[in-house]
Length: 173
View 1 (cartoon, rainbow, N blue to C red):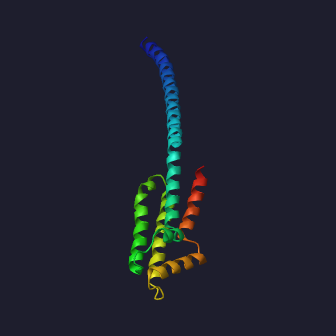
View 2: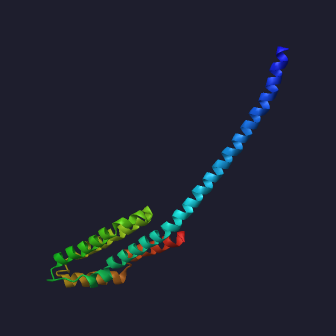
View 3: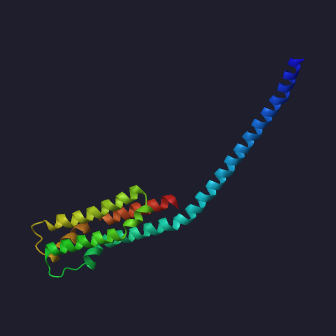
């Protein structure tokens, strides 16, 4: 008699446990699916809001690169007293100020792109310094002419970085 009650209890308990586990599994997968849908919609919404900010950052960095392009920089920054060293300092200071003004844009730009922009800035500064060290350059006007002459024969670091930015923007549009 005792065994029949145990078997009867087991015969009711096992289907109840299986039903409970099945219900748990379906509720768990449904909850996970809904959670993933919510995450996906949040990501889409964030991307929709972030895209204009990213594009604006690329625009600002493009403007920065245009402003430090030696051809345009030399036209914009004039020498006051034709002193070569003062002009070099003025050019480099202008580049650094422009860079500091746009420093926060790195949040919206990939690390690789940011590194290309920094390399472009440093290459432009190096170009100015190396040209200023030449013995044939004695004053600011000669420095300006020497840099412009060098830019006629090669691509500026700014243009290289601008091309990289254009490719970067194309990749996520």
